[in-house]
Amino acid sequence: MREKVEEALGRVRPMLQADGGDVELVDVDEQGVVKVRLKGACGGCPMATVTLKMGIERALKKEIPEITEVVEV
Image 1 (cartoon, rainbow, N blue to C red):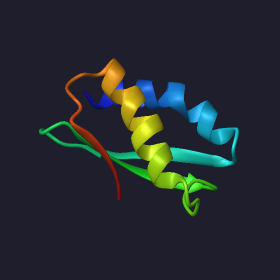
Image 2 (tube, rainbow, N blue to C red):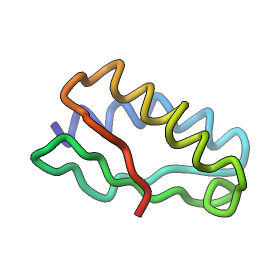
Image 3 (tube, rainbow, N blue to C red):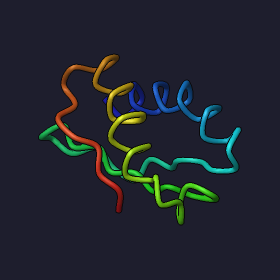
Image 4 (cartoon, rainbow, N blue to C red):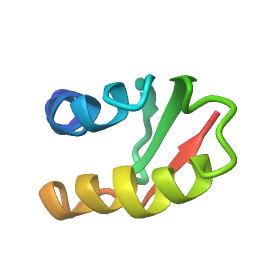
């Protein structure tokens, strides 16, 4: 499943990079929780939670239904 998540993040990444940010995959556990680290402008942005939940999590769940949640670490 990790490879699927990396591929899906690769499709989300250009949107983040356009605003000076990025996302790094940290881990995917057996329960379908994806742990990511927001970097660059996304790391300190007040809208980071919205980006994480409404952008990244929504995109990943759409492509990979086994994902239950995306959290920042």
